[in-house]
Structure formats: structure tokens, C-alpha cells
Length: 91
Length: 463
Image (tube, rainbow over all chains, first blue to last red; front, side, top):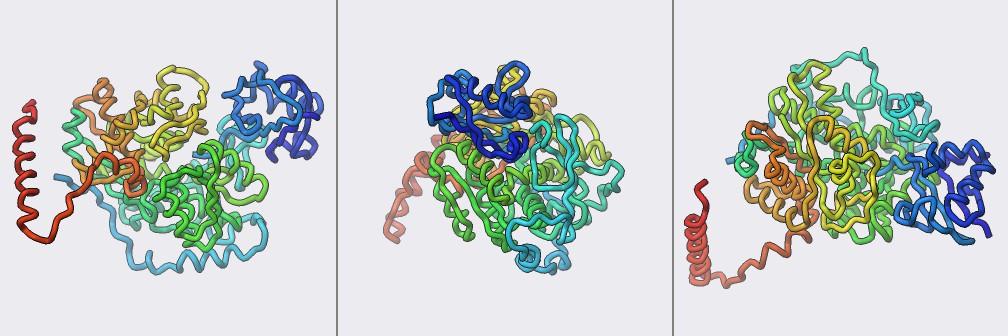
């Protein structure tokens, strides 16, 4: 079973309108790379030039901010859920 | 002795005779669903937006992030617009709309016309405590209508929501924003959905429920609540004050700076200390002071800005101290719930604002912020909530560290009311005696108090 990623509307338009996409891999970084290959327009808004999470989005792996869970190196298992939201919100 | 410096004119009869907000909003929100009007149907037009990062331009809309790079959007003001002089501003009604040329709308506002213009209170005892020339308290603990500075940002956001024809208003909140959104939405006749951490202080929950809002208590921290609200705005298209209306909402905080300048007689303090949660307030203080300076309404150096956080949630203060370039999020552990944001959206900008103005940040313990609440209350007669206690305690720390100078004129931004967070202060205040209604029962209490006062006088250092 793949790992699902829920996208905000602003990124869904870069994924052919899909609010939810799916990828496979052993780490979150692998899954993001897989999704980026499926939707190349998404890549620059998921990953920065250094291969790190794009700074204007926040990733949550099973409801936990990935910065508390190892970032893109966080291990993932089938059925895990990833949510991406724009970082500029709240306060 | 306290001296009130406020010099705002009272609201003229004409200002209070405008149609009620409820009547106006009811007319504007009859459109079913979440239709977004192409222009204002209420006489107020939100300004267009531009990305702070890449410069992309956008028509006025309930969006807060750039569709190109996901950077934050700011309102675009016409640099050639006509600006009022001091006398014109001073003659206007006593509300934050007296500064409307610096708020993100064209045309007259129609909602929340009477927010703003809180007192600036001279506080000589605090000046002595800090070892500076003057201290004033910008007292938003008495803000109308919900006793916090969030009334200001919501006044801007709800006008934007109404102008866009959004049929539901809401927010993610640590409490003060919840109160402000619920109250102003109720008055405007707009349904409100409020999302808060599940374990928020009782006063803030009751102070939201009372307005008839839909209040949802979310398991987790504020940052979890905020994540959900971003998805809510996406899914339902509601106007979420601090999500998709954020570009308009944030500008309301500038009015704190405008009021300070006007209340000081059209001049600037040398230093300002403010609490930091998401980091927006200090960035907007900087922008507000700079805009008045640019307009020629004030002269001289811009104030050094200092930010206060609790040690149990201090990602911005730690960024300032580390001179880093990336926020490291934290899981909050502090009684200062109103500033317990572990992943501050404006953290980087706030840290830059502090450093670039010559200021700094301080993080204080929960015990210290409780002492700050008591010091403010006992020296100025102002009862603030935990964020205000953190601000006072941070000012003391900054003074001890030599960051405040003897000739400084300091403004402390007290952003919320202590009645909302009585849980924080009650444990240290002790029990009041209960007596029968007889003088002989009172007499020993009076004598004991006199003895304590005499002892205190003998032990107070003279230097």
C-alpha cells in the first residue's frame, strides 16, 4: 500500500488537480521523490535546491511535524499519511 | 502616580449613528454558499496583493500565500495616495480607522468601527524598576470589544471577509483571537467557526462561546490547530482571519505603532518591548513606525524593538540568540498559552526586525512572568494576562543585561487582559480572610497589615 500525500489547493493545481497523491519508498524523502517524478511541476515546491523540504511548506507525517521526526530521512511504512500545508499561516 | 497620556477625541455623535454592523453585514452576506464577490458590495475594497518573496502581483482576494512560490503576500498601497497630516488625523474619531490610509482598503470601513485607541499609560514606578528615563504601557488589555490587541487585526480581517462576500468567518487561536473573532462576527451577523487547543484557559473558552460561535477544541497544541485551519480554509473556502485573510488581518497590528506615536505627541519612543507568538506583532510595529516616519508624521531614529517569549516556547528568541536563519520548531510547555506557538509563521521576519532595529529578544520562565503580572498590577493598576507578564519580565531581563539604557524611553506593549488567565496567577495570591461582619473581627487584620507595612518600610533598600 503506498503512502498518501494530501496537498493544499495551491499545490494540487501543480499535480493535475489531485488533492491527494501517492508514492512509495522507505523514507519520506523517497516518497516525495517518487511523487515529484509523477508530477514534475510539483518538485520545486516540495524540495529546495539543497534537497531539503521547501521552506514555505510544512510536512506532517501521521500528524507529526517532520522536523521532530527526522525530516526527509523519517522512515515510512505502507499506509502512512503525509499532509503538506503552506508554512505561512497562523499567529 | 499614573498619568494618562491618551489624547484621542471622543467619538462624535455621527460616528455612533451609523447603521449597526449587524444590519450592514446581514445585507452583505445573503449570497448563499461561499461566493466571492469580484468587488466590494459594501463600500470597502481590499487592496491588491504582492508576494514579499518573488514580487508576483495578485488581485484582491482571500489568499495569503503566493501561488508561484508560496511566500507571504502583502497589501500593495498606492505610493501616490493622499496622506493626512497630524491635525487631520487628530480630528478624526477615536478608533484605529483614523489611520485608514495605512490600512489595506480603499473606501470606508463598515464593520468594527470603534476598535483601537487604547490608553498609553505613564508608568514611573516601572521606569525606576527598569532603570530607564520613562516607561509607558500601551494598554490593549482594555481593547474594545474583547480586551486584547487581537481586536485590531480582526477589525481589518472582518472588513475583508465581508468585502469578499465570505459567508463564514473563523480562526485558529490561542484564545485572544478566538474572543475577537467570535465577538466581531456576532456583531456583524456572520457565522463563526473557532478552532482552539483543547485545554485552553476557561476564561478564553467562555469568552468565545458566549458570542454563539461554533467552538471546536482540537487535541494537540496551537500548531496542530493551525494545521487543521489551513486545511479548513482550503476545503470550505471560509474566511479564516489568520490563514487566507492573513495579508489584510496582520496590517491591523500597525495601529499599535501609530497610536504610540500620536499619543507621545507625534514622536517615537527609543525602545518598544512586545510579546511574540507567531512573530507578526513586532514585524508590524516596525512597519508602522517606519510608515509614519516615511510620511513625515514623526522624526528621529526608529525605536529598537525587543521581543518577549516564555522559555517553554521561545523559537524566535532562540533564533535571535543563535543568529540563525531557520526557525527550529518547539513543542510548547508554558503557562503563557497566548504566546505558545512553537512554529511561528513570522519567526524569521520577526527575528530580523529585532536585530535590524538594534533590539533583541528575551525568554522568561513561567515563575518570572507571573512575577511580571504582579509587578505590572501593583505598580500601574493594570492586570494583564500571561503574555503581558512575559513582556514585563523580559523588559526587566533586558534592562539587567544592559540592553535598555538609562536615557531610554520605553513602551511596553501589554496585549491582553489578566481576567482571561486567572489560573496563572491565582495560586500565588493566597486566600483572603473571611470574617463575621464585626469590627472586632477586622481589627486584628488591620493591625497585622500595619505591622507588615512598617516592617516593609524598614527593610526596603534606600538605593
